[in-house]
Length: 267
Image: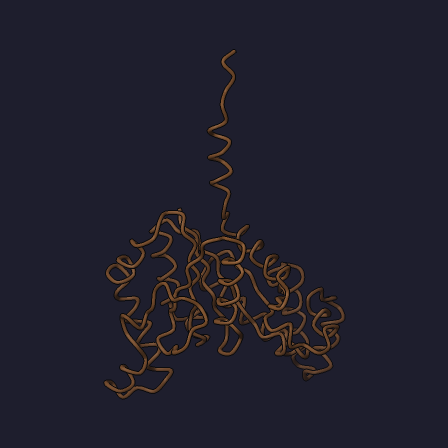
């Protein structure tokens, strides 16, 4: 069985930096991990690229040949990837062992993981190839400056959770750039009544029922929570990785195998 992270999130949320830091961490601790580029517009990488969508199709070529803009061109590239799952992707995956760990660095267009089925079909293909997959949703911690942005971030994350139907870890990235961490901590362990009060103060009275429903969704159903990530701290990277590994049951097969081969008493 293989293991995979699907690293998603808005443009500029730090997905490629996360992948690079994760690769460096695993290299330091002697763990093997392969990072895959799924962004047809990417140019520079701080990690060795194990697989690259640009070998199949690139955004620059699509924009030049078809006259599409950046967003339309990127959707075209991803739909082309979808059409070649059984050919290009299967051939690339055949180069890896059953227990390899892949990290897919995805583009930042939010429609790819909110309502366009490309990534969902991509994930289902991985699952048919016997991969355990976890979605890792990154959100810039500097975005979480007030209650309205917090709710917006929660809803975007929830949209991806519903669309992809995967084990899901939400990460607050760029914590090393936050000057007042107290503001962020209020959203990591939110008090629902405080959130509702702040939201009602920011919104017009006619939205009070909607506000109440949104806060109940975040609180009572425990649908969305965030893990802070400070890339300066190895302990922070290690904690996030442990959370993801637990989601995809990484390493559990190895434990079972050890127990299966315990010598039995001859008595």
